[in-house]
Image (cartoon, rainbow, N blue to C red; front, top):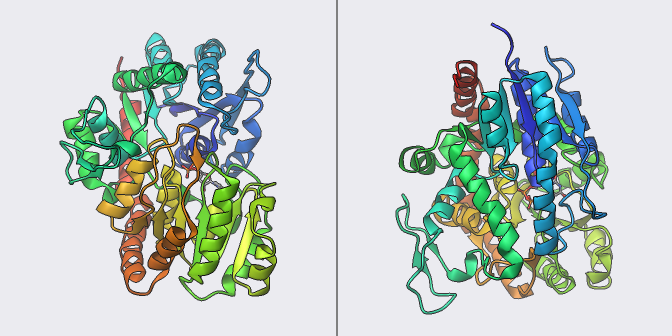
Length: 467
Ligand code: UDP
């Protein structure tokens, strides 16, 4: 039998591109031919992944297509400027359909794995008689919650009164404040794209997840049996990065030398450091940075804190020097080697915005979390962390932000949450549960594990696919 060829079309945001690149490496490690198609302005982000497959029977092939938008600066979603800007970016993605189809026509692959933001790939796949697999960049739990709250009109009298999300395996409580608010003219295009994505996903051959069965078993079953979707879980894909070199550069070049970072971590006792990061998209306001600095200082924990390049001026004067002199804090300005840090035994806590990758990387590192969601499905992910897995505490009273802005939380709240997660008793219990999950995650990706086996099933499904 000839080798199956899988074409990946990742969305250009880091949170989607990093796991899809990891998936391509994983597929290549199982002997499949893989090609990643992306735009020329984002192709460099994949160089390291391609390098990882150098010794395999089939190295990942990279094919670039031109993304021509009339508007300058609209070629990738790294800078979330406004919902309007993001919507225009999403709409412009349909211009990739024609060059994408030309590529499919020439190369005749066996399967397309395409991000949710390319709903038209379902049409492409059916045109060429091959399966389209959707990738949402998130887990089973958030998708089940999302489906359950769509069209739900909770019977509550205020935005902060909790209601129970119906028809789910656990009693999950949310407030209206935590749900996306997509009313108004400015959300029209965005909503249209989301609806197209959901419809295209339902018409796809199936959905592939960066998750593992033991993390959310009831929701894997709910998604398959109640929502009746074909799905495969093959993660956590970050666990396939094993060496320091592989862990260090995922998506972007790290702003700190990895040896310097490791040396700092090695000087700290096991489980004593809290890592603070809000991922690649969330904007943290100056006022919020100030409060985080004070909260971290008051928590008395050692920390690694990632801020954006150029945000130093928002931090209290003398803070960085003081923390450095005490050997208590390391501030990374720009891009952190996140997986390398979370995997280090000195790290015991993680203040996170609950992006799906960060949650999985936190679980894989066996750390307890302060769940501080900001937008997208992060509020649902936070519930998984705190209420279902019980490996974290949440920052309460924050609401869904339409422009992905993190703001308004006072230092005392941050201090208390960090202190709880880093404490020996309460935090220790959470860490113990997180470490059990960490072991399960490692087992899942090993030969015979749940993720390994689901990938075997996936490969079989692709090979035997009939129109
Ligand atoms: N990431 C990283 N260094 C950083 C910030 C982010 O390596 O300084 C990686 C992180 O490990 C994760 C991804 O970028 O794999 C972010 O995805 P996530 O779903 O957590 O959040 P998003 O950025 O999409 O909001």
